[in-house]
Image 1 (cartoon, helix red, strand yellow):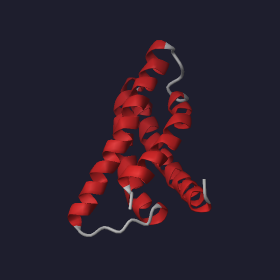
Image 2: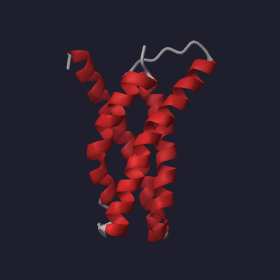
Image 3: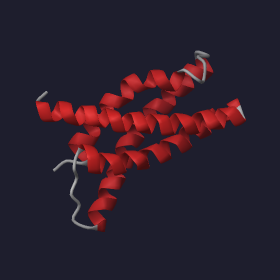
Length: 131
């Protein structure tokens, strides 16, 4: 990895931390209301955090320059597709961890970050915000 990639990854991590805070706050709010809402909280948290990610990654991490609304919408769609693929994996892991392995609902999404952060960085760098 060169210096630029390391810097981007560190910035991506900062944005990711804000996404994690947003997503987990929403998730924990849902399970505070009713622990049975953990999947709904996961979905809503994901939707909001991907929008946050797109804004900050396009400005702060990858310095994307869009040539109009169409290019913004294409990049936004790519962002949701990238995060969506990873979300499907996370959704499956969360189901496995909570419903089958009976891990605590508070811990499982944090463990999943070990997988999702590097994968999301690569997808965003190579596809969503490629130059």
